[in-house]
Length: 147
Image (cartoon, rainbow, N blue to C red):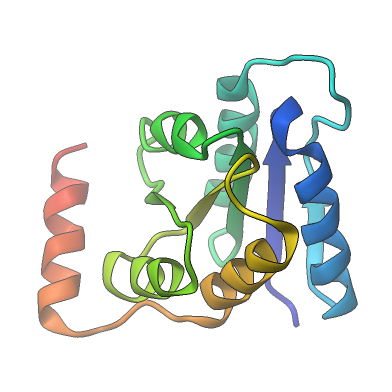
């Protein structure tokens, strides 16, 4: 696989992030860990911005952001022009978010998602391509026009 994956977490997501990285490396993905790597409390916006800037700098790349609920990282990521972030707690949400909403950043909950499910969600996100159906393309353009 040649797709670059940028992954980050706050202090809540360190453990699950480590599991996801091992899983992705096992499948030969090019993974860059942007921190944090400690249980010392940090503010998630700093890490969300860091990962999103990398995604924007590498057009075919994807981002994975993890915090306690996934919601904080998602809110922060969606403030950045060009980022379409979605929080997913199921394989179906990740698949549809990528296909229909063209998300380029996946946000996960460390507190409500176990490592096995997280790996399945990540696989669905990475292995799904954005749909070129007119209705999805139109809707994504409408969102971009709001920026």
